[in-house]
Image 1 (cartoon, rainbow, N blue to C red):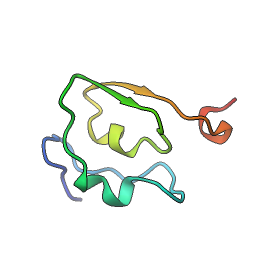
Image 2: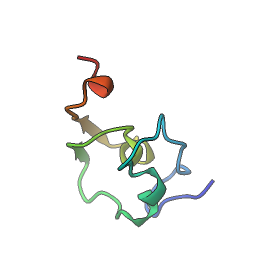
Image 3: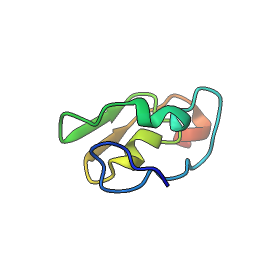
Length: 68
């Protein structure tokens, strides 16, 4: 598995994939600058799972993802 810059863990596999997912390009995103990650388009939480040691707030409007 590849490691992302600034991350202590390897890049995990996505929980699920879908069109527009970030998992395939996650190594192009910079490491977070702050202790809290706010992901307004969480999807499979690919970015957040790489930086699991941070405080993470996930949001999404897709009812299949948020369970509403």
